[in-house]
Image (tube, rainbow over the protein chains, first blue to last red):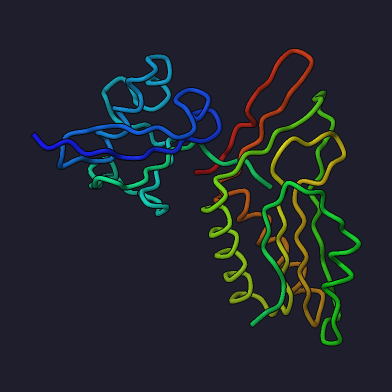
Length: 95
Length: 137
C-alpha cells in the first residue's frame, strides 16, 4: 500500500484542537474524508467537532485543498494527493 | 484599473490618512466603513486569519464591487492580532463620482467580508475566552 503525506493547516478553534500545521500520512488514493479523519484521530474530543455520529464530515467544517474551497454534497470524496495542502476551519467571523 | 489597496496588517489603521490618500479630482463621494472593537464586557480580542486565502478573497470581493457598482477607488484594510476596546478592526473606503454607488459598494464589501473571508475573532473576558460564532461558511 502506498502512503502519502498531506500537509494540513487548521485555524481558530480547530487550530487549538489539532495544531496549526500538521502532517498526516494516509493511504493512496486519498480523499478529503481520509485526511479529516486522520486529523481528528489526534484528538478524540476534537473529532466530534469535525465528524458527526454517522461518520460524515460536518457541513460546518470548511475545507480547502490547495487554497481552493471544496464544496458540494460529494466534497468528502474530493481527491487529495501527496504534498497537497488541506485547510480546515470553522465558519468565519471577520469584519 | 481602479486605484486602492488590499491589506491585512498587524499595525493600526489611520482612517484620516487613508481617506486623504483616496481623494482625487474625479471622486465626488468617499464612503468609509470603520469596524471598531465594541465593549461587550471583553478585555481584548485576538483576530486570526488564513492570510494568503483572506487576501485572495478580499481581492475577489474588491473586483466584484468594481464590476457591480460605478466606483473609482476601493481600499480594504483588515487588522489581525490582539486588539483592545476601541481599536480599529477593518476599514473600507469606496470612492465614486456620486454618493449612491459609493454607499452601495461599501455595504456590499463589508457584507461579503463577513460571509467569506477566513478571519476569526477570539474574545477575552475576565472569566476566560470564547470564539465569536461565525454565521457563514
